[in-house]
Image 1 (spheres, rainbow, N blue to C red):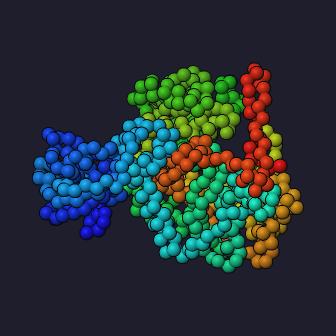
Image 2: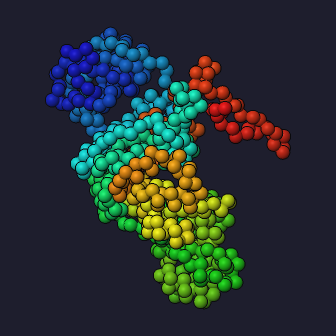
Image 3: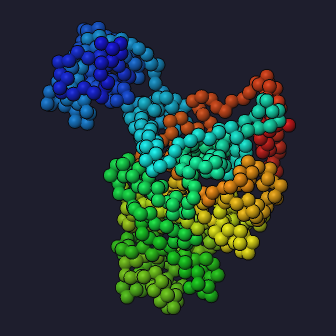
Length: 605
């Protein structure tokens, strides 16, 4: 018999009754019922119930062990009997009468419960992540992630893509976030950057003559954590294709996503084909560029209705309305609680009216609406008795920030929100540039390597804020899964695009020397995309926080509490790397409280 096991803890069935077996695993749970000890033994594959009877060496050994100790047991498979079958376990028809026990790894008292959710805080869970991963939900999530990545690889190869690797140590690149930098010992005073994405390298693959590339790529960005974004590092399905237009990229990715979410989505319906929604339309109708399409409710721009209105709350402002049907029997609390929700997002309140018989309006602002206002709103919003209308007014971005979430929340509370579905969409026609409201500076709004719609002519003749890029996102259930673009592969267009964003020709030649040099030797039209693996698994696992689908994530402050990273370097290592530290300098604020000057502690002199 094998040294540690003849079977796994998820393998035994009624057909194994009478068989002598050897199992190894963790002591998951223990119950003493009438002097008989029942043990749940757990391994990667499942749980088997053990039985140890009083007076036996097995009883004495198992009774003293702490939970989560690792043991090897020898015993005989017996039937539980019909009245004791556990239908929730694949092994629930049998148990093992233990004859011999060997302790393989004794455990200290564990800091939190493994076999139940005891509400332990996330910091504690991350500190003992190796224990947290023993929990059924976490184990299931990590195995789902493994299966999803394996399926992605298989499907991408079937679609004609080839997996290739790109460097981890590279040069800094303006990808929209801060780089993680690595000092070079052999080149004093110089630094590598960990790639924010394999952007330039995958384009260079296309220029090198490879046609369809993919990689499950690690990416590193020094940015703050969010529920759907892990600080430090993340993984994406990096994809690039030659001789393609936008729709050519959409086709294989849409097929991949549809198959992936149908296979691992637990029976939840997947929309197909995915609708194409222009960016500006998405901002107007949904309040953001990652719309949750599990509700059909839409925002409507009614600014013109109140342009010259005497109602000061709306006059001269951007106003959007949300009409919610079938809310005639909702109590006042429905409206007040939505108002509280809007206030929690930063609004001063939420204006609303009800539509009654004969389309008469009632509610807090009904008296401020003229007959002409009511007539236009009824036609524009398709109002009928039973509707409720919510209004947001202010600056465009301000209204979007409030009314976008209100739209989804209202749908949920009114019972007009689909559950157990995946609603995908492509967001297209992104603006190439945006203006910084504080500085007035024009900068890239998306990927700086994108091809502008209209090419060089558009760059030379249009207002930069009117230029659209061949850029696109794929979103699902209000989560952005990916950004992509048809690339700018012509040097003249690249120089002009960066010039508009304030980069000199010399800067572009220095920052992107390798890319520019490659473009000058025959570059094909090419484009790609990079769906986030972590976010895909988060959606499939129905987890609200992305860290629940990553085996060893950093916390919200970009710290690894389990391994103690980041760490300080001793003086000998700093000297070897030619680095001298500048510690943060404490200043005094106006109220005499100490504040820390923002100086990066690892800045090289």
